[in-house]
Image (cartoon, rainbow, N blue to C red; front, side, top):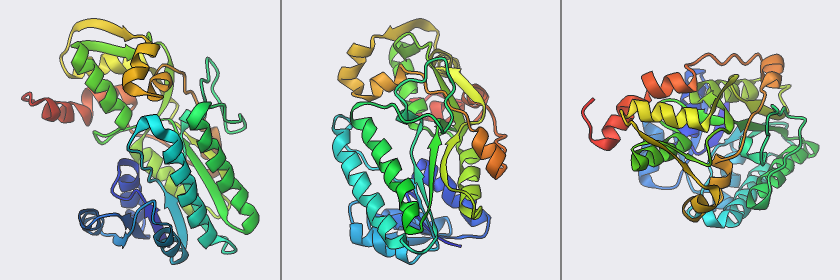
Length: 311
C-alpha cells in the first residue's frame, strides 16, 4: 500500500515509517526541507516536499496515496496551543478532503492528554474527552476525523499514553532535564499521579494493524498495561543519571510559568485501557516496560551522551 505519512522524520512517525517499510508498504513522507527529504530517502521512503501549513501539498500527497497516517504536529510556542491546534485542524481537513469517497484509511494521532485527569479510573474509548482549555481543541479534531466516515473515509484515531523507547520521548527528556536541574528526583506536583505508557515500537505495530485491517475504525487507545507514577519515572531517571539529591516537588502553579499548559498535564493522571486494540486488532505489545527501559534500556547511553559523562 502507498502510504502518505506526516511526521516521517519525527519520533513516532519515524518509527512508524520503519515498521511500514519492513512490512512491505511504500511510504511517502512529508518533508519540509532538503535535509528532511534526505532523511526520508535514507530510510528507504519517498520524500514529498511540503509542510503542515502547505494545504495544497497535503491534499496532493493524500490524493496520490492509498492511505494516510498523520503523526506530525508543529508547535513553536506552547503558550499558543490554540494557534497550533487551529493549524492542525486545517491540515487534517485538507487531507480528509482528498480522501472523500475513496474508502481509504486516515489515521490520526491524538493522545491521552485528551483527558483532563482520569483520577483512579482507567478510561477506555467510550469515555468522552474531558480536556479543558486549548487542549480541548484536539477533541474537536478527533471528531472531524470520525465524522469523515460519513464521506466514505475509513477514519481511525489512535490515542497513545506516554510514548517511550529508542532513547526518545519528549516527556522523558523533559523530566530528565528537571532531574538534572535538581540533582535528584524532581516532579511537577508531588509526583503521585500515574500515566499509562506504550513503547514506541509497540505503538508502531498498532498503526500497522490499524492500516491493514479494513474493519478498523474509530478510536483506539494505545497503552501496554504498563503504568508508572511520575515520581517513579523521575526516580528511575535519577538512578540512571547517578543523581542522589533530595526529591523536589515543584508546585504546579509555579511550574506553569516555565512549562505553560504542560505543567498541569504532568501533574495529572492519564490512565487508559487498550483492551479494544487487543481484542479487535490482535495487538500484542511486548517490548520492555517504561522503568526498565529508563534504567537498563535505551536511555542510559542517551543520558550519558547528553551530559557528557562517560558511560
